[in-house]
Amino acid sequence: MEQDRECVKKKYSRRWAIWGIMALAFMVVFFHRLAVGVVRDDLVASFGLSDGAFGTLASMYFFAYMLMQIPVGMLADSLGARVIVSAGVALSGVGSLLFAFAPSEAWLYPARFLVGLSVATVFVSILKIISQWFLPEEFATMTGYTNFLGNLGGLLAQTPLAWLVVLFTWRGTFAGIGVFSLVLAFCCYRIIRNAPEDVGLPPLVEGGGKGGGAKTLLPALAEVLRSRGLFAASMVNAMFVGTYFALAGAWGVPFLKAVYGFDKARAANHVVLLILGAMFGGIILGWLSDRLGRRRPPILFFGGLYLVLWALLIFWPGGRLPEGILKPYLFTMGFSCMSFAISFAVVKEINAPRFAGMAVSVLNVWGFLSMALLSPAIGALLDRFSAGAPLEIAYQRSFWVCFLAVAAGFVCAFFVPETRCRNVYVASVSAPPR
Image (cartoon, rainbow, N blue to C red; front, side, top):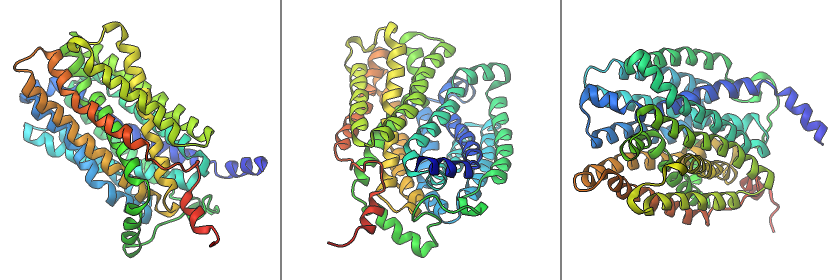
């Protein structure tokens, strides 16, 4: 049996090139997702943005991303990943160029919205590709690898981005990313294939393939929305990922500069540890879940740890954790947060394989709604609290919204269904009647 699986993997070796180019596109997604926090001061200097305006700008990406999730899921299941990823990455290049050459603050918002709208095509499509080109028991592990490389893009949006901004200005740097994205879009179209059948190989997954046209997809969407455990998995994903990106993508660098007096490079270096934790957490927790053959226990254990870390931040006397523990603290926070990534495997396993893209997209709607709301909420709270309190207390009070969100997500984790790493939808459909 093991020998047969090795033969299968050799026949399907092309999958690594397909996954690799899409993972590179996902690195660009993460770069855009986290970059705005590092260039905050440059944007303030250029356009005079307030904390509230900056929070709104950061959230434009997430609102656009959220709005595209269900349409992208339908397109991934019908048209396939090749066309929509190639078009999306190309459009993100246009948005990045528009951001780079924005003549006024008013141009920043549609540029960031356009980038969010276009890169929304990538992650759902990667998971759709994984569901077609990899074995079911490899799904959580491959999701972990994908998140590792995505977070590597976020890593490049910290200290390396700070250096690039010094060398080429923020405008020159975003213009370069725009040109790179256009070249990457061409490569995506040349390399990506939607399923093994597209290159003459038999399907790896029972019930896989395209989901069909609109007449099929709309009832399928209703079926996905009714699937047991979808809401609980969505809330875990939303509350954990939303708080992580509020810190890593928008407020981590400003928080460290204001409360600890770090310069931009030192603050970015500390946020890098948060991202590194997420990179390794994604790989290790995905592998651990596949290895254990369980989904819920890793979510509960590491989700509980993530909640404890947020509690430390908001209950620590004086609102300032000791500087000496910041590095391990941030790394562990990023690591434990990645327990949310297991929720992608759960929703794939409670739905029909041919609608994997749609199932993941529905999950992502909640995640990006959380991201879109949390960053401006923190900015609005900071505007309110910073007038009458020291900055460390203002941030501590503002971060309460993140603690409450994580607490809600942890409670929902108890209601995530245990699939034991198999597709329970297929098992229920194929089971003989009793």
